Length: 154
Image (cartoon, rainbow, N blue to C red; front, side, top):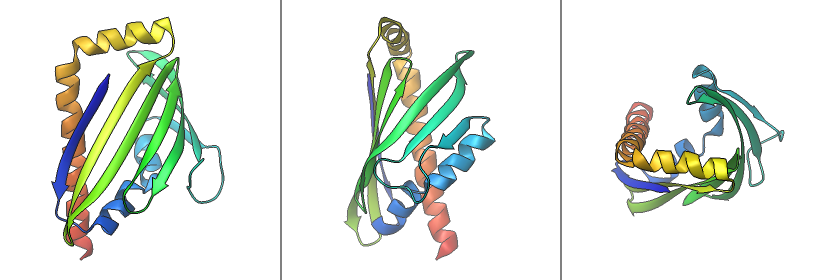
């Protein structure tokens, strides 16, 4: 199952990439949402950096391991995650439309590795229209946050 969307934002690509690749901010946000996240590797985030994440989904505790597999400033990044037989591939691609505007394209693809994961994905497919709207809304909200931050910083 795959979700993808794109948003055009009025910020330079370098600024957009700095916000998209601000992993410390992601970690802080997840901690505020009562998600337990820890970075396995010390030092600056680079390809190969891995996180362990523990959270609750559908009233069940879940564990996820995420690894940064691609980091190409300023054009994008990719993260591969594995959780309970489910593989998630998250890609964020940035394209400069002009010096002051950028297209942000986000895609998340989920693949099942086990029977239990297939059952979970099948149930999620039934709710795909609702999940797609929620995904697009979150990406739109994130894009607006980037624009607002740029306006404050400039």
